[in-house]
Length: 266
Image (cartoon, rainbow, N blue to C red; front, side):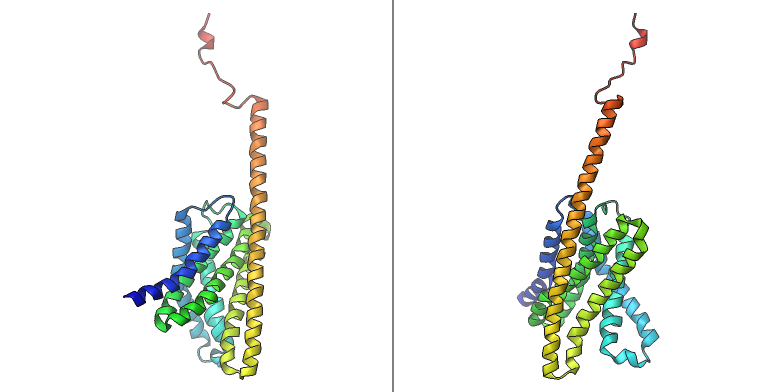
């Protein structure tokens, strides 16, 4: 029993840490727990959707030469269907949510969806392959799903608040998340078929790419934090202008009292 608890802990702990991290980065208007839970469990539900998409891809390409390549495994069975399933869940559950009302929210919700997916996937891998796999995935795979969510969420927020470029931003976010995910998996998978020297080079490229992905994700986080700050300041300024206009025109009910019985007095 203790072993199962340890395995469960190592599988879930990195997910919890990253959820707390991104929640604390939301500095202006915290998202309600109900909406965050919807995103997280939506990420879990994206796994059956992913399986359905992978099955369809397998039916289309199963008898072709490409089905036996590392590219197919990393992109067609992982990067593309997984990010597409998360994107569809976001659009179904979060896009019209009234709490998706500032720039940083896209990153928060997309990250929670990615971490919901990663949580189920991580539990499966850790219970099947053990503690060492859990440690490796805690350092690589779970943060990767988080960062793919940051990338996707960054562009989803731009699409939400810039409707004139909505199609471009939606497509850009989806394709960039798919590309990052596919390359991440490809660099890990391709080493199984290469010589030790080339494998070492590939691992070096992988580490470089992982660092770059973290830098990109943190940059997107800072940028949307700044956009949310400006958005909050504009809303506050607009509210102040509205109150001033109400007062100057005499329609602010807080300062103007109507005496309904004035006409009956003599």
